[in-house]
Length: 136
Image (spheres, rainbow, N blue to C red):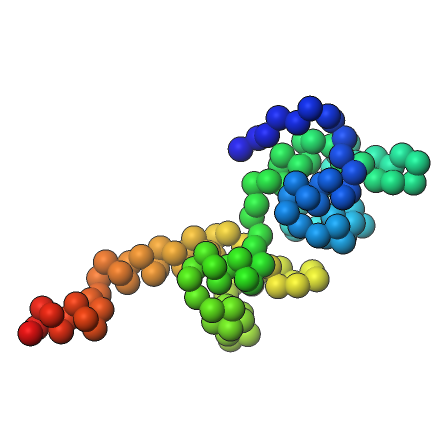
């Protein structure tokens, strides 16, 4: 979803607020232009008076979020953060589905895969209460 912005260039602070990330994350994206999170093209940033400015096209592109923090993943999957870390440390998350540049980030493909899996469990299995009611 692309949002229409009135102005063309945004400060790093404004960009952080719009994207819902920290200021240091935006600076990190600028310093590591090959970051997996949201690659910044040369035409999407500039430096004026010693401060970086980011173009609205970059912000629109980054709003299609692909990487999530552990707390966001636990909220989306309705699992605990320790469960997510357990999956990571025991190799249950494929190597292409996570990124550890500064902190653990999980790709949306893994989240979608897990949602399908848990939805499949809901359809195929009964809860303890359901089975006791059915069996009497």
